[in-house]
Every structure is written in structure tokens, then in C-alpha cells.
Length: 244
Image 1 (cartoon, rainbow, N blue to C red):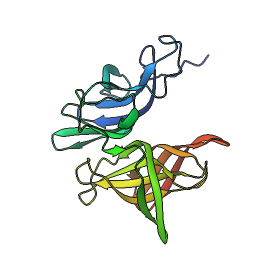
Image 2: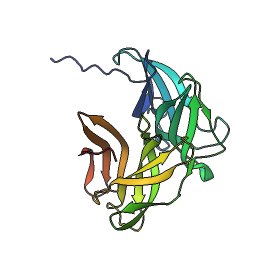
Image 3: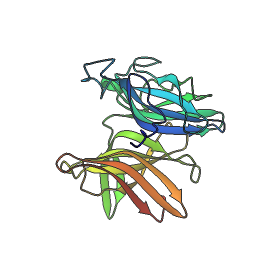
Image 4: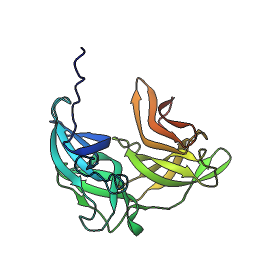
């Protein structure tokens, strides 16, 4: 009988999903969405919408130690109902986490900062991009109107002095299962974001979730979870000669 596969990390009595990472030079920090599992909370109806952001660390990516919540709903300087997927970058002496939040007028993309990746404070009195905000992007010979939904990913290095962020978005005035797109924004200070490009609009998906970009051997790669409410879901990798 084959031995069971090694699962590097599974927090006890919790669901954990949508991981993102930061490396401080000594250890790797994992951040992820977390909610009690069925053994701890039999009613799972609130899982998607009331989750929070967990935190674990490792020195070898094989053995992980759970630190506890990094950010929780309803704590800090403004109220939210739930916290969702984000990413972490370092700027000077501070680490910054741009993440999704929900709750009445506090929905959107919010920003928090930390000096040690463990103790986080929320910045501003609400999201830096409020839910429902519509942006105009150049597209072919005209413009596209995009509304960011969730899952911001900031590339870990500035480009020409700009931070670059991609986000799961909807193209307005497009039908269901054709409106999913990945928009790209840029910012000088991580607080004020302006539209830059639409880097992918396949017109075959409802959402392009948890996108990430990276460069390898001179080519750029975009990874995401594609959602189509009729045909089903899948994981995809797109590639390009250029980062944008």
C-alpha cells in the first residue's frame, strides 16, 4: 500500500484555502483564508463571506507552524463582515497587504501594514478601492469599463517606480460567463490606484479568480482559477512576451 502523501500544512479544525506568501529572508510566511470546518462548526453556510486571514510560518516549506489570525473581521479601525484573498509586498521598513473585504459600505480592496508580518494594522477608514467602483481602460480602438471584484495580486517589484496590481474583474455590459477579465492597475504609494491595462479578457469565463503573474526565462506567466457557471471550473496558465 502506498504511503499517504505528505500534507505540509493543515490547521486543526479549520478550512484553509487561497494561500499567498511572503519571504522575510529567514522564513516564509503563508497567509490564507480560514473558517472553522464542519467538526468545529457543523453549519457551514457562512464559510464564504465570514472568513478571516490566517498566518503560518516555515523555514523549509515542509514543516509549518500556525501563528494565528493575521486579520479578522470586525477588528481594527473599521468594521468588515469578512476578509478574503490578497497579497503582500515590502516597501522600505513596512510590509503591506492589499486584500478583499466585505460588509455594507466597507466592501472593496483594503490595505493593512506590518513591520514584522505578524502584527497588522489597517490603513484608512475604509477600502482604498471601494466595491462597485468602475474604471475605464484602453482596449483596442476604444475603452472597456471594468469593475474590480476581489483577489488583488501585487507584483513583488516596482516597475518604473510603479506598483503593479492585477485583479479579478468584470467587464460591464457583457453577458454572464463572458465578462470575466483580469485588469491591471498601478500605484505610486499602494493607496491610490489608477487603471493601466486589461491583460486578459478571454470572453469564456464568469470570473478569473486569484490571479498571479511571474517572469521565468524571459517570458511572463499569468495563473488563475477560471469560473464558468455553465461549463465548470478549471485552473489556467496564460503566457506573454511582455509583463503587461
